[in-house]
Length: 283
Image (tube, rainbow, N blue to C red):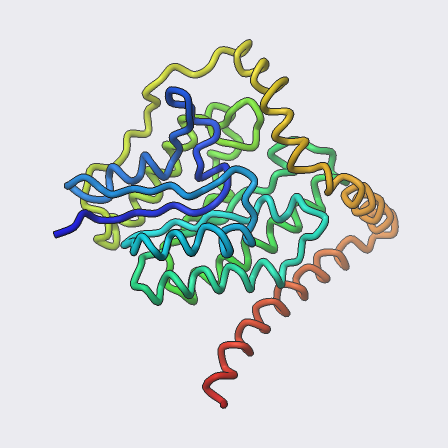
């Protein structure tokens, strides 16, 4: 009998950024893998820092399908919100294809909604609100598709762990070891409830001492700042435009229109997927 196979897809969060072990990253998915079964688990992490939904669909999914996984995590979307090309309909269509391909192969799919990067970075309201609106749109799509494909879905966009600085690394975008462990513990609990995880739950307590303040500041001033700059360069001009629009609407008392516009875009994106599913049956 072959060992249980767990494959992780996604971006830097799943790659493990913020949870350094040796010369690389570990992360929540690796921590979760050890508790999925009583026997050793065959774990492969295909997540890559900076990945967007397009990268998961076009690059990571084919490799994942070749591995014939029993469990697959798909946690992605934040990088899409940090791009000037953000399109919620395209994000929805890509995620739909990824979830469908994996569930058709019989894999259990793990998903999560995530906090928005603007609030995590502590950006001013006029800059943070457009990013928050985008992340809420992605989360709404992930919620809907997770239900459609019966995925194991973790609500990670809220709760006290977001405001607990002990959970986060110096860059404020990635969990530290304690935060990665929190994600692993919560995913394990969901899987155990459904009888899908039979191994010991990951420990919520860190294995390594937290980085010193000076070490955290050094990382943020070097690698951390570079990471943020690389992800946001093409967004900045558009974000300033979005911020200006945000301020105009607030001054006029019409901010609700922006939320309504986003809600309509999400509804249209999900409706388009429903129509696409119905067409083969109607043919």
